[in-house]
Length: 84
Image 1 (cartoon, helix red, strand yellow):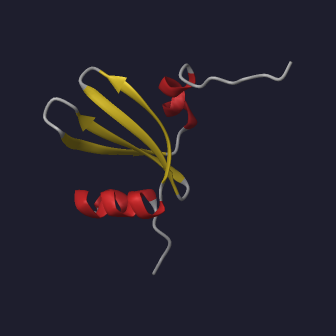
Image 2 (image 1 turned 30 degrees about the vertical axis):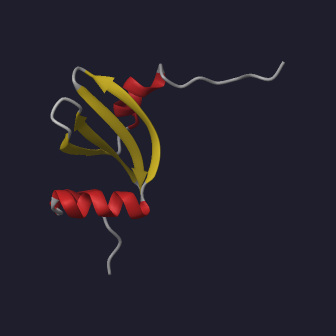
Image 3 (image 1 turned 120 degrees about the horizontal axis):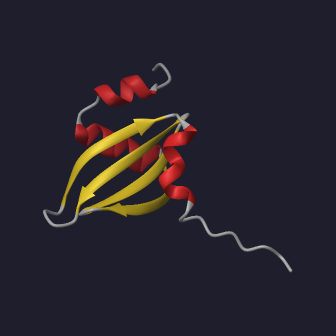
């Protein structure tokens, strides 16, 4: 099987995306935006956000990207502990 690209991943069904992300993805962190809980994952050479609607208890979209600028909403959530 060919290496999965971001573009091929986007062509998968929602169920296939979720299974692949669960099996091969690395959970990084989450954030909230309005009513959505957004889970950020790393998968191969791209990132996947899973947008989850808390009120209706369902995934509403998978958002893929490679751009580091798109990680900006997460930067304020990262806490680093510096050694003293």
